Image 1 (cartoon, rainbow, N blue to C red):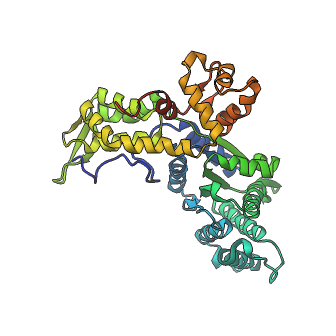
Image 2 (image 1 turned 60 degrees about the vertical axis):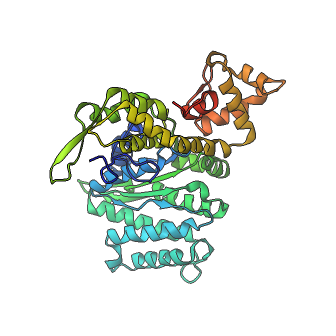
Image 3 (image 1 turned 90 degrees about the horizontal axis):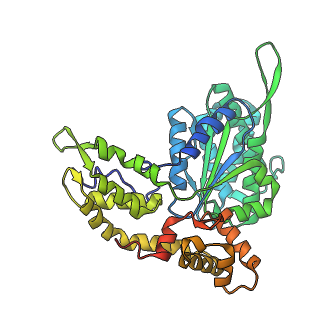
Length: 410
């Protein structure tokens, strides 16, 4: 009991945490909007989930994919795009797997066989390929054609979706690759086909295909600025921020009330409980960061062997995690441009009630208040780190704590 094999916390492993906290809005969006609308043949944009490292973007969509799989949907694995890789090749390979799940390779229809052959060529050669041997179409068009065939197979199958998840999309730095990928996915999302309905009529409907893109906030600049209205029209972007303390409290309430069930090592089971003060301390030190929440829970679990996690065990575990927590926040700050870091530092040094744009601009040495405006806007709307209210506040509470206090020390 309370060992590495039964620890339910999993920081930074890109798995779906057993102890899940928050993100109910995004999960409800899948259950109540995206899936039902696409299944009904109604148009619905793809989803882009962005945010700074540690906010649980990949885990969120992996959980959505898990729910989709349990409902019988066809899903791709998490397609993580390495820096410098050809995204069209990776997506082509995944779509071929979807086609196999749909039974398309066994089809005798020539156009389906042609579509599979073209995408197989893309999977080998990627963006560098010009398919002049068949119909001269670009690789993205071949990918779109096969996605359409997968969508048609899903319609024929009944209430089944095809879900595509592409991760680390900010690593697609080649403009041509990004353009072809977004167009292929967007064309599949917007494609309509005619189907028969009761009464002998024929109506148009969208395909039951959903696309989720996840990555760092920089991607919105890359896709939005270069593709403009086309990207915004086909994908809805959400920038994640810290999780509310109430959602974190709900996540650990099972430990407090009933205990977390684990094996007792003799074929039976026992429960690991948590003191209310211990759960409150975990919530306090993580500052709404999913990664830090999992890290604090993991180390508290390892800090003792008793059936109850006490406050002192959380403290002892967090002391082992402090270096990693500090490095986590430092990595986020280091990747920001100098002016954005300066604004955050100045804002953190001001008393909370004085965090206005006027005071921030003065402290940054600007003669005009408007000089700090674009930087503040970017930290709000693009990065989700601050909120430009009256006064300004930090949405990323771990950054605020690191810049304005002796956190992570407790």
